[in-house]
Length: 302
Image (tube, rainbow, N blue to C red; front, side, top):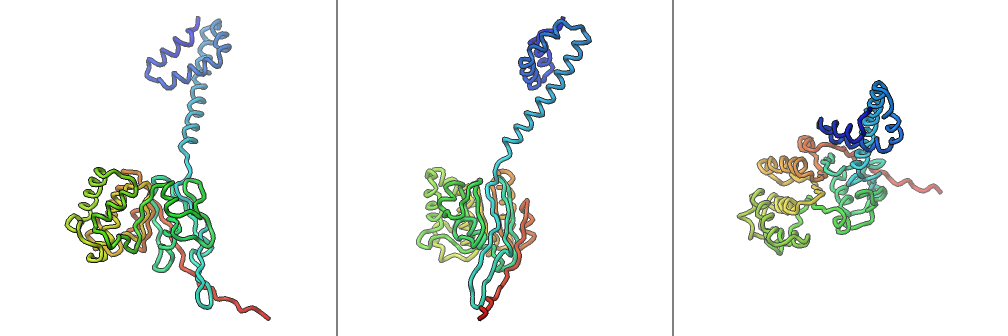
């Protein structure tokens, strides 16, 4: 006489295959009538029944695997579609990105945008952040069209920090006050702010400049303030516009490994622009911008 389903499953469980045993139990419950008829079968029929159950286990595992893959397939954090920008100038129009630039940045990704001077790297950063609107195209965050939304509204959806080419530290505040202001506006408690600020300022060698005002600092030191603020914010999405500009080689050699570590070890999503191939190679993926196009206005025929 064949073993009852519960006994058969417990024996399989004893072999260490708990997940398979659970799937066998589900299958056996669904096919109760088939199992009941097999109880009266011969030993050879029982062997065929076990084989069929084994095949069912494989089918169930395949179905489970597909379900898990479907759940983990999420929408990209950032998606830009056919972004173009046209600037009217004397006797014509300056067009950036040719027929349009499109790219996707997955959650936890690291993308480098590579292009020469004047090719629209900073403009693209502004469009992604909501500081500028494209002439044509769409910006999506987690599948939602955010093209017309400001930086504040975008950051409310996806916590974002940015390091732009131009210094953004307030000249009326000291270095320490600038960092405290940024983190307090994000709602971070003071004790935690103190710890984050101390860590980031030490990393970028700013601890001796904590009470200095930005206007008394060099361009490289101002850039380090913005980098320290972005590091202390611990954002989900970090946007950097040529982060190594104005930095000496010693600080640059700290920044690039830092970005790789934030991305790899902390799953921070990073978008970075650069004109240097050696810096672009730090990213997992790259896109290359096209040179701008100048189009002259055609006279209207009379």
